[in-house]
Image (cartoon, rainbow, N blue to C red):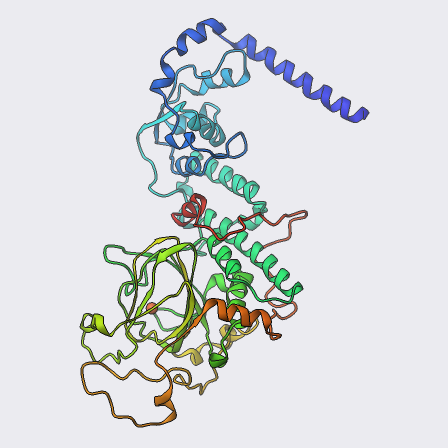
Length: 498
Ligand SMILES: [Fe+2]
């Protein structure tokens, strides 16, 4: 008790001293200040988004505010609203000093910090009036020459890292991004949250001896921060030169080398949640389905394309709150049509990926219908030449929940070869292969029900793939997510623009 009193006394003493100093330093009276404020607020409006309900305050600014401030450079030209803060306070004295700044560099030199800029920005006390402003927030992981970073860059970077750590309950060390990782700070923060929550979901499923639900996959996807992928040229909608897409598992690079992508092991439980979803609900007719890789896709409708280098069929499912987005599929496309455009509308089959799980041949033409809302899709597939993967890439794949095909696996074990269009279909050489379908589709509610009844659950091996990405922070809490899988929030979208 005595200690508490002493603490309270100490706080009071400091406040009084600060207030007295502020009053002494004040150069105007309260009535003079009120006079100066007349008609000023209208000329210095708050950002429009501040009219919307949201969180604010000293410790938590709006996402839009972070997006703005992290784009500033030392040469960003700013103007401060004159005498915006009431006299007799410490903030008035500081404000009177730093509001003389005409650039962000000057504002820093005059004693204001990124947190001040956020505070003042949200109240309409600062305007950007020109100068250099970044198109994308500063991403220090992509800076080649750190000697070119300015004091402003460093101040923003250090502050923003602390803000993200605080906001998401992460440690600063976990947030540190190594060069070449291809992740910005905000991507790293979101992926760490996805990883932490994926681990909790796996633990809960294991404890309750149940499959991972569609909802849990969807939440993991909505927490994940997608990379802008410029390499998937064949699927990019017209007029777009990148898509939100990541690959987990094996990938063949442009030089032909096969490797495990960095996030696969960096966020092992994210990989495991996605794999467990399918492991637990592989339909009876597709028990032998194998996959080495996952494509995670966010919010784009793939244009008509053929995958090209996959081994065997792919399993696909879409998640989220959206309408439309069906898969158009030409199951008999044997690639004899010279061009994709040669495929006819009448020959396409439409598959509902929201309400069902589909097995299809990605090497046949396919596309995604336009949609509204938020749509994630996951494609489970095997890369061509998977068997040439170095042993160190193959090691651990099964622990992560992949099912690696044998060296002599039959790519036609589940779906037959396409028969081709526009010519007489090959006469029935009535073998077993001819009897197989060219695609399969299962109703999601049916496979979910079977999965819940099944006693065969996939469980991560004990000690497998410990979360290298996340050091344990004492008292760390699982970040609360909405119960229903929701559209990516502004914050997630912001992450995706980083
Ligand atoms: Fe595809």
